[in-house]
Image (cartoon, rainbow, N blue to C red):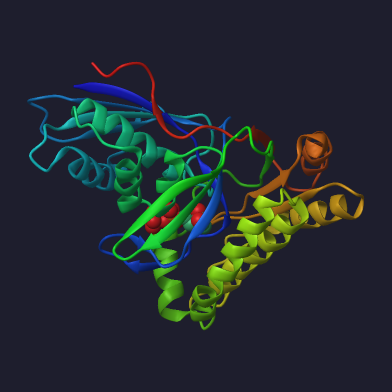
Length: 321
Ligand code: DP6
């Protein structure tokens, strides 16, 4: 009745922003991401008869405020008649700050929850269960470079490149580890309702996905960077033009963009992306990683620099008992 799973966050290069069905949490657009290795969430789920409520801790602190999404997700995984559970989550990186902690958390939760409930589920099924609670979490079920594609009334998620196919590195410049002001789900809904650019964003996504896939096939970092930076800035333009405007950036975010551009002008193969938070993620090949990390660490306003290789999809740690 108990199991522990580990999952890593993933960083989208072609982003998910917007839902076509908010009840079932189906994304409005396809997306493509890198699964990280060195940042992770470990999640233990223990079903216990006699517990009145699910009890969630995050890095050993009780978090009843986050319990509703976790309980709903466990209901889908183990059935609404399930026993209540103790859920203990540990992340080795800032949570709720635009570092995709919801992706690693819900990916780990479905893997641990299914094992603890004795449910045999395929990776595909687990990805759909994770995606039903957090769209980006579906991608953390797979390692390497991953795509999420919309089908009629569901999603298909799969690996495009394994960790051995292309050795990319991700350097994260943390500019503010505090919680984000607006949750991504709420922000997407505001964009859909109010941003004049939302329709254009949806219409152009297939072309960005096609360009990213072609760049991957050719292992062309410059081409991948070109479409990823465009897609990222386009998503943020959608947010900036929403009413009220949603600006997740701070001054250091902009400084980091300048650093990445300067590095590129200096001959380094590197590009940036930014999610619903002020952190900047720089993607490069191993030969440029030290220079990228050093330059970002020296950038005004950067508090911490994290580095990661690409990693595996969510998995059980040890056997369920
Ligand atoms: C900017 O997956 O957190 O990181 O489905 O509402 O939980 P919900 O949204 P979430 O949104 C992630 C948005 C993003 C882009 C991306 O990861 O593709």
